[in-house]
Image (cartoon, rainbow, N blue to C red; front, side):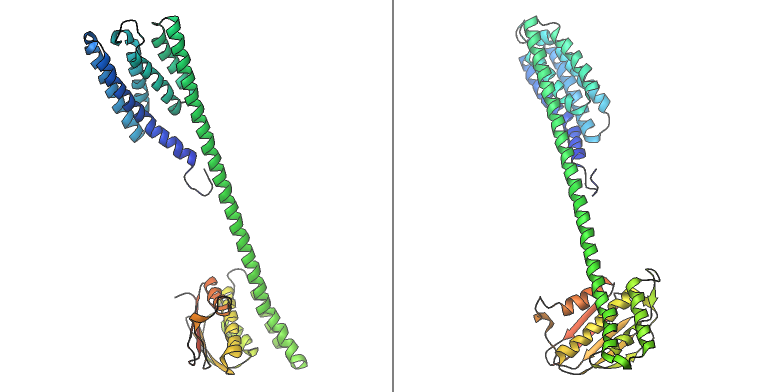
Length: 367
């Protein structure tokens, strides 16, 4: 079965065959039997009606077996009995004495054809051989040979068609499985590329920022502070404490504030340690928000409020903007804030209007 757990095409094909082959045969042979009774001489009508009743009983059994999936051996036995009875009495129900009885011939051929779609050759071969013997033995060589040739040819073609369709459905299943496997591989490749891009962005936003601080401060930089920034950045980048490692958000944010391009008024509420991935998303989002204040607000100061929950708010009283009119190619707000927070299990909301300043709300986990 395909790895994507979709229903197998081959299984669906076999289900359809098992469900409808028997009922279709039963209905078809019932109609043929009605016409056979109409063509039967009056003297053999009691026999013909008996055969018609047998055809009706068998059709009901085939219908129930196809609908419920139960009683298939009983339906198979009745199918053979019906065909054997009609073929065995072919001379008694023939419209003209000595003529080949088309009722019996049609029942034989349809039975031989449809059995190829329901049962394996080890079952159908002896069954068809027995029915052929019942049909052919009373006939002369010429009629008997033509009947044998016709039935064998039609049964072989029916079996060949069944095998061909089975092969096609198996091939479709293999192609679907291959397509699903390629889709999974592509998804994994996309995820790996996303993680690589994320790692490069983290590397830029953390380690590069620390190196920039050292370069800006030069000889006045406090070696102990620089070492602390570097250790914190390395822990976040490598996850050395394991996937469940936690960091202190206030410490991480104070590192960002120390490098902020604008003056920041702060208000802190106690926040418990949070996972490094969430702290990293918040650190990067705050850094991006402060950078946007410096670049776009027209003011040189902002407010940072940290509340338990965890909710971090960056607010400026600058010129503001209309978020709805931001060009799609500018991914600062969408890529650096909203999507980053969503990827870490949080959310970001940017509220702004021309002349009314800008507020960035960062919440983790998502409320």
